[in-house]
Length: 93
Image (cartoon, rainbow, N blue to C red; front, side, top):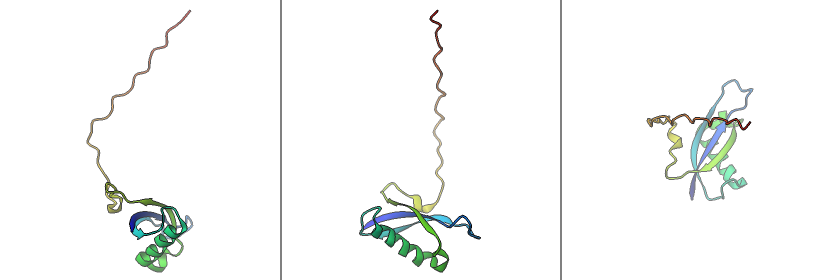
């Protein structure tokens, strides 16, 4: 079974806004109805009846590098890229 990451959100008119992601396993192909069904069932198992109105926004395959489920920001300590200089326009007349 392949591991996937599902992103969910609550309706815009909801009293308590919810947005997040969770991991689930599915044997169905990515993006298929079976895959979305497995994600929905896992979401209801995790969050219970409050998740009935929530929508699954996106489902993506979890890769070895993908640590998206820890919900921690990554810091980038690299130096900023130098600003590109525009070429000066030459007058031709």
